Structure formats: structure tokens, C-alpha cells
Length: 542
Image 1 (spheres, rainbow, N blue to C red):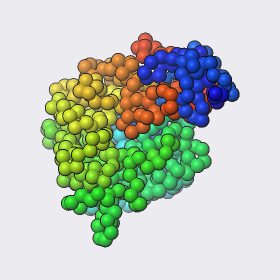
Image 2: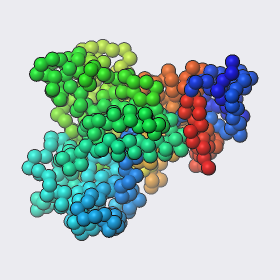
Image 3: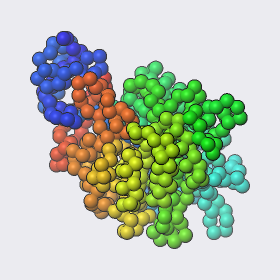
Image 4: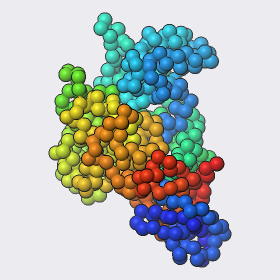
């Protein structure tokens, strides 16, 4: 047999065993080891003694949002609100009057002075419309010119407008209150989404990422346009969707498909229908190896560092604040029941421990009413997981999707919100493995820096930016972290038959690394040498 390419002179950490060579034909692996090296090939590639691992798979990211945010005023490195205002003023100086100034990535936990305010933004950018997105995506600060265009008398349920002592809005919109901006900013033009996917794909390949799961399209807080799936399809047709993408569909765009009055219902009726989803009955699994519909994405609550997630007990230092749900609790249960009955995989954002309890109750009820053996329903983030709820999650066969990178970048803010008594429950990793769960890995990018090699180090060390080890019992071995970022993430998308390990018959997607990522001593110096998708090198380090 004459194959397309033989890759050799490397250590292949396949996920099951080590190998010395890999042969690819028509985008898939057809031989490994000495069998591969012995084959005739159109091309032979000497990898110079590098280490090869399965392509990294980010199980929860926002690729379009990240790509488009590269045009925003970058605020993640600001250390005080005055630096934020200065950055806004610089952008305003080059923006025509009346134009938008969009910034992203600020974190009030890292800013001297806390959240920016409308008054400060008014001074920094007079005559402009200003919107600054919090790094979590769960809050936004706007200036007075934007506030004047909003109907503050009708704040959506599941959100709030923060006000100062005299009752005036500070400019901070939290959770569902951000939807009031939609008439001014939505929908995002499809061409802009395509450009964002193009720019994000380029960055991802440089980091060894070959496949991702997009955590919400089409509606809700993270959707960019009702035609968002069309944007992905267009990006693919143009060749600029360079990483394999499984897209989660926002719960708000699913509806009953029965004929009659129920067909236009946004949320399911009291009695779930087996016909619930997207038009034509499309649901989880529709698509191919490049672009697939994944889970339904549902938001239950908010943010830990923003102190809006639903908690059983108050946040540290705020005795009256236990957070809140983004939708009514009974609506969470109805939506999960309907989507489960209709055959969807479900991914529910739940961060606070009370939100996790409510979501577990909903999943348990749905599975009892309509048993399904291999559902792979998920809890996204699953940030504050009590011991008793960990056992229940495992017994229901659920997948928790935490973000190990959070510990480093926003871990100090999470510790401050929880207090020492609840720190051991925060963004668990090892406990999930010990309970028998399959553990995926992800970034939630652009909430934090999304390079997998950075995340591997954080999953192993669990150190916050201040150097505190957050949950020492939750540290993984390097091998466990690597498996989470490859096989675990593929499993969470029902994609493990094609991705996650380097085995005969699977897609030839892999990352070539400068050193062994399962050796902890290399984690501070390792880098991506090259990335291959479908057997072809698509990125090479200069």
C-alpha cells in the first residue's frame, strides 16, 4: 500500500501506547510503529525527535467571540480603573464621534478601584458609545450614552442593573440585563463572525488545537446571530474554519415542532414533546467530521468571580448575596426534560452549588421519566461541587466540564468569593476522575488564555496567580491532564471514535511538541513545533 504521508523519528504518545511512526492516508491513520515506517509513501516527514500527541480538543470555548474580540480594546492587563479609562480614551481618539468603543477582558478582582463606572467612561470617551465586557462574559459596563438608549424599567428576569447609593445606575449590567443591549448590537454581521472564526482558527492551530466545542450559538448571552451556524458553514466552505467544530445550540432557539399553536413556543410546555429542537428535527449529532451540532446549551446561573451564581450559602463578606438563577428553576427542569426526551445531549451552565443541585434534580427526573443509557449530559463549569453532589453526578453518568486554567488566572477571585471553607469544592478535577467520571478539559476562552499547554501546567499545579495552591487534592498527574485535553474532550462530544487518541482508523490530527508533556519538569518550557489536521501539517513554528 502506498500512503500519503509517513511521519517518523518521533515519540508518538498515542493515548494507548508509544509508537515510533505514523502513516496517514486520506486524512486517517492507517498504520503505526514499524508497520508505518515500512510503508511506501508519497511523502516522508522526519520530525526530528519531537514528541507527538493527539490534537488538543477544547471542550468548552467561544471561538467566534474570541476571534472577534481581537479587535476590542484589550483590558486584561489593566491593574486599575484609571488604566481602563486611559485605554478607552486612546481608542476614542481614533474613533469617529458617535461610534462604538468596545473593550473586553477586565476583571474587577484585579483592578484597583473595582468595576469601571459610566461616569469614568463618559469622561474617557465623550461623544461615543462605550461597552466594556467583563472577562467572564456575565457582566458589561456601559457609559451614559448607552444607558440613555435602554429601557431600564423593564430589566429581563435573571439579571439586574447595579445602582449606587442614590439609586442611579452605575453602568454595570449583570447577566440577562445585558440582553437590553441587543437592539443596539444584535445581530452580529455574518461576515464579521466568519472573520472571527478565521482569526481564532489560526491561533488555535499554533497552540496544537485541532478540534473544539463552541459553547453556545444562535441566541442567549453568547449567541452572535440567528444565522450563526450559517457563519460556521460559510467559514468551512471558504477554508477558514481550520479546526473541527462541534457547536452547542442555545436553548432559547429550540422550540416545539408539533403543528399548531405550540410550534412557536420558545420554551417547552408542561408536557414535554418528543418533537423539540431545531426546524426539520435537527439535533445532536447532525453534521460531519468538520462541523457538527452538539449539545443544547442552557444557562442556569451566572458567574463565581462576579458573585452572581446561585449558592446555598452567601458569598464571603456579602451576607445578603446568594446569587440568582438566570431562568426560573421550573423552566430549567422543563427545558431539560423536553430536550432529553427529544434525543438531545444537554450541556447546562451551572457554577454555584445551589444551581448544581437544581440541575442534578432536573437531570435525574428526566432520566427517570425517559431512561437513556448513553446520554452524556453535561454540567458546564460545575464550579462549586459539594461532596454529596459529586457522588450523585457520577451515579447519573453525567460529565462535568471544568476549566483547569481558571485556577491560575481567576483563582484568587474565586477564593475571595467562596472563603476557605468552600475552597476544596472549587473546580474539582481529581475527585471527578476518582468518582469514575470521564474528565474533559477546556478553557472557556476568551474568559482566560486558552493555550492547552498552559492549562496542562495549571491542572497539574493548581496554583493561583498569587501562588496559593487551590484545592491541592484536585491536582492531576501530567498524563491525566493530557488525557483530559485529548480523549476526555472527544468523549464529551461523542467523538472518541474519530478523535482523542492516535489509533488506526481515526483521524490523523496531532500536535508535535518540543518535549514530553507527561514530564512535569518540561511544562514551563514546552512549545508546539507543528500541528497536523487530517494528516497534513497546517502549522509550523517559525
